[in-house]
Length: 202
Ligand code: 5GP
Image (cartoon, rainbow, N blue to C red):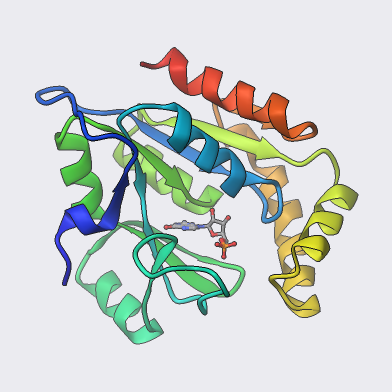
């Protein structure tokens, strides 16, 4: 097992020791540009840690273990459930995804702010555990735009895209759970908006 440092990507070295960090939760339907917006946050916000999730989903081309996700088997994930290892976990589009409780707690106690890229089921669980978490939902301009982006991305099969679009409707229906909603119509505007939201809390 790796140490917690291995699980969290550091955007900058300095921390705020003695003060507990904020949790920023970013959720969005698949294909809403969330990864791009999270990357922009990591580049523009000093001292922000990205919480690398664990998943049973197969690794995509170009994804790296410990950077994009920790990839593990269904059995390993379910063992983690029994052992209470996850701060939150959910079945998303047919695979398990989860955040390690230990890694999250250690990150927060180091005084740094942490960015979680998780779905709405996970967001609700984190809010129960850390009610002061800042929640941000990224909304696609339309279902059609989402479909086009997923097809253009070319990372998922037709079957997977269909499932993700169906799930997107359910996710959009729950966006009121979130404190901030950002519409990703024009990318640069969405980048500016999400940076402004995070800066409000720092
Ligand atoms: P993807 O397979 O496209 O990387 O991610 C699919 C969905 O799973 C995204 O909506 C993403 O936010 C969500 N997700 C990623 N990691 C986690 C996690 O640790 N917990 C939960 N609940 N959802 C996650």
